[in-house]
Image (cartoon, rainbow, N blue to C red; front, side, top):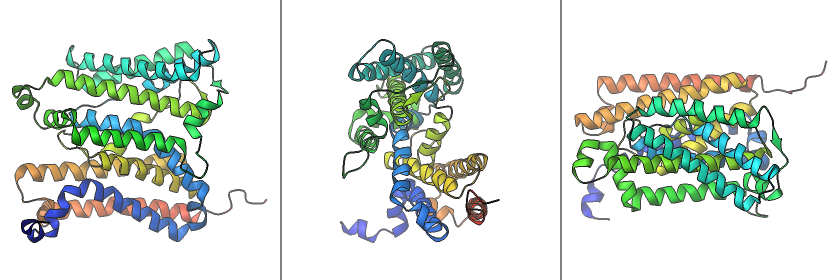
Length: 372
């Protein structure tokens, strides 16, 4: 460590890591709370395994969505791409006798093709990302409904179920290995390759990136192709996990994935990304939802809690980025301003709402099958 680094204030040294610190603090808060109110049920091995399996399902998609959002884009069709890819894979296996080794790559290639269509609609036809991907979400979901005709395709070969819920004896579940591998690959892409550097440059200032010779439209298409392929991988993992798939599967994939990425510190305004933050965001949301289920809180309240986390995270990171643009001397200094104090009070209120929700659940977390 150099002398200059050693003499820098702690606040300045922590500032580059705020994207990962935020989710980690919230994860610690959930662990602490559940350790007080439901330690036996929440920390048992089977429940921790469920958390990991749930988080692993979203890791590939969160990795790809990090690149899309960093470029000031958004993909709302990720759930329907996952469903359509999985439906076609299921038909290839069940009705046409394709091997899993052939059907899975075809599904992922199909997802990449759908991502390519999204990217071309956005870059060539100049349709805004939000509208373009929302429209294609309807298109892909419609194709899935037409193909499936209300059928639930189930009972797949063991190899496919291993991808979704298998476990290496004495080691972590196979889906966790797949999800973690994709996050590591995403981290390398983001921090060690031109693709990652170009992604951040495009999100920071597309016009300036174009002037430096970066093909902005081409790199945007690359990000959407990656997003489509990872969506298809998510659909494959979901099919293996449930050992079944239908056209209406994965309806909230887009919101869950976007929430995880944003909670992890990737800016919706572009130019700021954290793959480690996205990883922590996926884990945080899975832990939070599992905690709400453990406390037997209704599904609708789980949606409320997820929404509170999303709103508070987006507001916090938007405020932090504005302070960066204004040159306010970093977010630690900005917290001392009147606006900063207001943000702290708002954050305290939102966190209080979550704590109250968990507390209410804990009060009623009794026997789920009372006698009488």
